[in-house]
Amino acid sequence: MARLLRFTALLTILLLTAGSATAAAPARKDSFAMNRAAETYVKLVLAVGQHDADYVDAYYGPPEWRAAAEAHKQALPEIRAEAEKLIAGLSAHAPGPKEGDELDRLRHAYLLRQLQAMVARIDLISGKKMTFDQESKALYDAVAPTYGAAHFQQILDRLEKLLPGEGTLPERVEKFRQRFVIPREKLDAVFNAAVAECRRRTAQHIELPAGESFVVEYVTNKSWSGYNWYKGGFHSLIQVNTDLPIFIDRAVDLACHEGYPGHHVYNALLEQKLGRGRGWPEFSVYPLFSPQSLIAEGTANFGIDVAFPGAERTTFERDTLYPLAGLDPATAQSYAEVRDLLQQLGYAGNEAARGFLDGKISRQDAEAWLVRYGLMSPERAAQRVRFIEQYRSYVINYNLGQDLVREYIEKRGGTADHPQQRWAEFAKLISSPRLPSGLR
Image 1: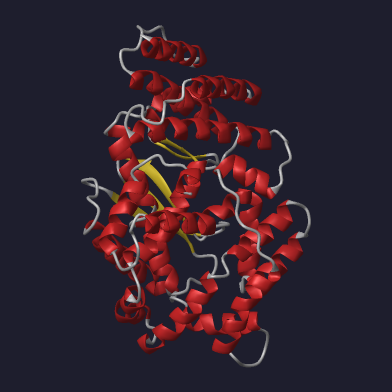
Image 2 (image 1 turned 60 degrees about the vertical axis):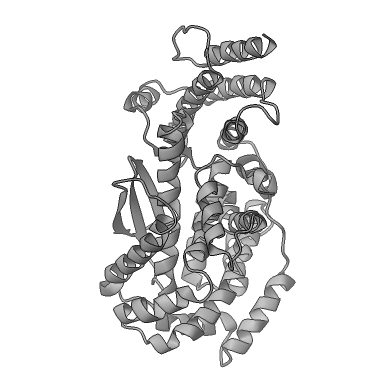
C-alpha cells in the first residue's frame, strides 16, 4: 500500500506540471507516471528551443507538440518554473537501489539530470554567469581536467623528432599534412568507401534497425567539420563542412563518428529500443546542451577505435582510401604516427576554451594557443574559436567523453585484445540512458 501511495502521489505531481495533460485515471503502472513526466520534459525541451536555436538537436515525436511550442511561445521563467516542479517531483520519488530493473533506475536518474541541465541552460541564456567548469558540470555532468603548457610540450617534443626541419613546428606539421589532403573531386568517393567499411564492421556486431540509412551533404560556412542531424525513423542527414582542406584521416573519423557506430547508430538504437521498444517519450528529443551529449560524443569518438582496433585503421586507409584519394599508400604509416600524436593534443582545445570563456585570454590569444599547442593552422584555429563561441563548454564532450567511455568499457572487459566484449559493452552503452557520472 505504501508503494502504491508513493507512485500515486508522484503521478499527481506530474499531472500538475504537465500543462497540456488532461485528467487521467490513477496510474496502474509506475511507468505510466514516468511517461507523463517524460512527456512534460519533451514539451519543455521544445519550449526552450523557441528561445535557443541550437538547443533542440533532434526531434521526431508527435508533430503537434512541436507545433504547439511554436504557436504558444512560453516565457523562459515559466519554462524554468515548470522544470523545477518536475525536478522536485522526481527527486521526491526516486526509486530505491533495487527497485525495478536497471534501465528503469537509469531512466529516472537520466530524466532528472537532463531537467537540471535544462534549468542551467535557461539560466545561461538568461544572462547568468558561470565559469567554464561550472557550466560543463551543470550541463554535461562532468568537469574536464586542467592541463598546463608543460603537458602539451612533452607531446610537441615527440613531434619535433618526427618532423625535423626548418620553420616552427606548427608550420612543419601543416606542411606535412598538406600532402594528405583529399582532392575535392575525390572526396565523395573516399567518404563513401569509408562509410561502407564502417557500416560493414558495425553490422557484424550490432543488429541495426531495418531500413536505417543516411544522406550525406557537403556544406560550407560552418563552425564545425561534420554534423549528424537525426531525423527519426532510423534516418539521418550527415553534413560535411568543406570550408577547409579535409585530410585523409578525417574520412574514417567522420564516417565512424557521424555514422557507424557513432551518432547515427546511437540515435537509431535509442529510438528503436527505448523510444519505440519501451514507449519512453523522452527519446523522441535530443537537447544538445545536456548530459546526453557527453555520452553521444564520447561513444562516437571511441567508436573509431572499436571499429578499427590496433593497426586495422591504417591498413584500411593505406589499401583502400589512399588509392581512391590519389595519395601514396607508402606514406600511410608515417602519417598515422603523426596523427596519433596530434590526437593526444586534444585537451589543448579545452584549455583555449576555458581561458577564453572565463575571460582570462583574448580571442587572439585563444587562437594563438591552438596554433602553438594544438598545432592547428591559423585558419583552423579561428574556426575552432568560432565553435567555442557558439557551443562554449561543449568541447569537453569530445575528449573527456571519449576517455570516460573508454575507461568504462575497458573496466568491463572491453579491452582492445577482447574485441567481442568491447563491441558488446559499446552496444549496451549506446542503447541505454546512462549518465556521464555513471561512467565513473
